[in-house]
Amino acid sequence: MFHSAFQRFPLLGICFFACFLACCVRADTGGKCTEFTDLNLPDALIGTDLKLQLLLYTRKNKNCSENLSGQNLTSVYLNVTKKIIFVIHGYRPTGSPPIWINEIKNSLLAKEDINIIIVDWNRGATTLIYPTAVSNTRKVAEMLKNLIDEMLENGASLDSIYMIGVSLGAHIAGFVGKAYSGKIGRITGLDPAGPSFSGKEPTERLYHTDAQFVDVIHTDIDALGYRKPLGNIDFYPNGGTDQPGCPQTILGGSQYFKCDHQRSVFLFMSSLEQKCNITAFPCDSYVGYRNGECTSCEAFKPLPCPALGYYADKWKNHLIEKNPPVTNAYFDTSDKEPFCMYHYFVDIIAWNKSSRRGFIRIQIEDRAGNIIESKINSDAAVFHQYRQAKILAGFYMDFDSISKITLTFSTKNVVGPKYKLRVLQMRLRSLSNTERFQLCRYDFILLENNETSFRPVPCHEMDV
Image (cartoon, rainbow, N blue to C red; front, side, top):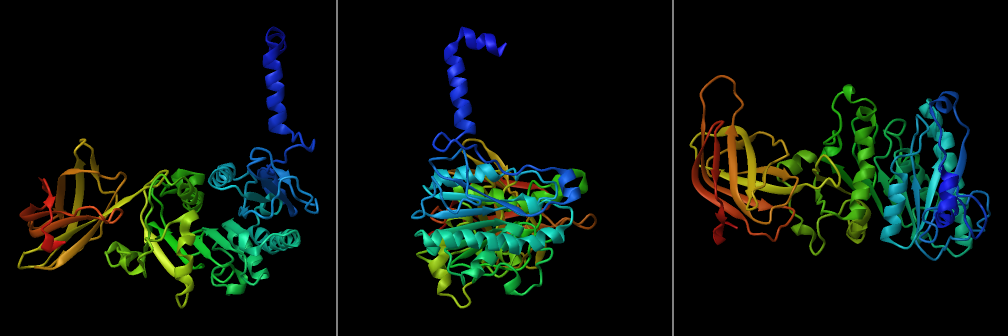
């Protein structure tokens, strides 16, 4: 069938053959494109000996890697005067290539004209015996140091080296950084592995002195990830534990085990695409952030709030001046890419004589008719007379113009009387866009378990 088609349309055959060459062969060297090692469960059962492939991509060969392994740096594409980013994967219990590896490479090359080196240590990471993979991390780090030494001899700068490590790969990056006394430019740790590293000394894991700037995203601190801070700035989306959209029970299959852990990678890639502004707030704890204790970055001006992911290094100079130069930042996300969450605070001043403890459910409707309920399950608030209670709300879309707000007060008591919450003032303020007008409503009553809707008005100047 294909033969007859090419006979009838010879141009089709020429195009097909040209595409084949473009995808599979480097015309300048005649060599085949090196692919990321693809293994399977039988390989993991047997175990694999460590073998390293260093796959170089640039804008000139973004679809066909050049294998730097064993070439003594006789590269066609490597330009050591440009930034060099190493991407290092983690433990691979089934041997399959990481599903995100091509996307992160393409996103980075779209962002900057740089060198991307995918560190393929799948042979060595693929094993059912996790401690074996852990022991190989030191060996991989030593191999990477040998390559970087050659690069430095050929004119590269430690300042231009940036390592992005996932899980075990984050600790590999840390070991490389230690070998250069923390002088490499930057390390990003994406949910650094916890098992076999938790409780270890800084020399045995990633640490904030391993590079000039170290940023970390923690998304699975109660299972596969590392709980405590490791970098100059540590981001804890959704508190660092259960991520929205990930299965909460084993009925979710393999995703139950890996979804939270992998979310760090997808959050980082979302930061490259910049489809929304993921705002993080420096704070001592997630509880403090949820209670409204750390929802302003006024103290850090002219710096904005910390940026998650690729642009986190905007905070580098600020953190260098701190003692110690470390910060934790918290925020909430949505359940799917690009994980945007638009944060608001609903501040309520009650005038009940007796204190009330309860929950507030929040809905917002915009002028286009979109009705969205807050996706953050607020903790119980205590409403004291003439005191402000802060309730954090998060929405999967932003609101250019708000036409109606709906509040529902509940004590969640099954038995007993129904209560009223007398509100002296309600104020809605955006955390994601602090320049926006704050909206208020004055003097109304919330009947328990009844929706109360109203049109907000601009807050009095004295209230803002």
